[in-house]
Amino acid sequence: DIQMTQSPSSLSASLGDRVTITCRASQGIGTYLAWYQQKPGEVPELLISAASTLQSGVPSRFSGSGSGTDFTLTISSLQPGDVATYYCQKYNSAPLTFGQGTKVEIK
Amino acid sequence: EVQLVESGGGVVQPGGSLRLSCAASGFTFSSYSMTWVRQAPGKGLEWVSYIIGSSSVIFYPDSVKGRFTISRDNDKKSLYLQMNSLRAEDTAVYYCARYWLPDGLASPPGGYWGQGTLVTVSS
Image (tube, rainbow over the protein chains, first blue to last red):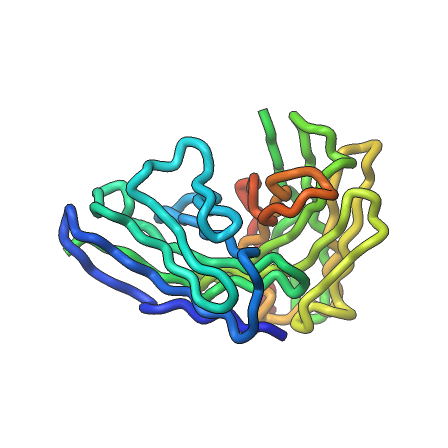
């Protein structure tokens, strides 16, 4: 099975900072990669599909890139509402594995 | 408006069984693949099962294969998860989630999520 590895597992950054989260697949998955945001106490929400397609309503400070095995979620300017745990998920085939999550906090 | 409402969670002893339900509304249920995802307390998301709109394709991860069974009733617009031989490590909030796009179109599994139902396996 393909493993999904996110890094870092947590980070603390200042408001306005550029934040980058990495997701690496153990084998190529094309661009079948989604990113989710889960705010504390809330249900996960789809942010990005197909590695780089921003869902409607998601602020433009979020962006995704990558293909094959290496993917990145970037927040261009960290805002208070971005405090959350972010997960990647592969969906090219089963198992539909999630990364272990990256917790983002404000410094 | 898409709505997914889970029910059926509760406390069950190790080795016991539980059946979760997910009532769907606001979309053509039979046209969408559905998944169950769980989240243990303080932990990350774990995909638990997948079923295509026609029920003809079903997948499970190894961690629940042979113990959990996903099913759906398109007439009742409902998704189910039968959980048998439950273990302490199955304790989690269980979410049902709808694919973003209808079957036949590639899309991520977690387009819409329910609020979840808590399953606690404890003696």
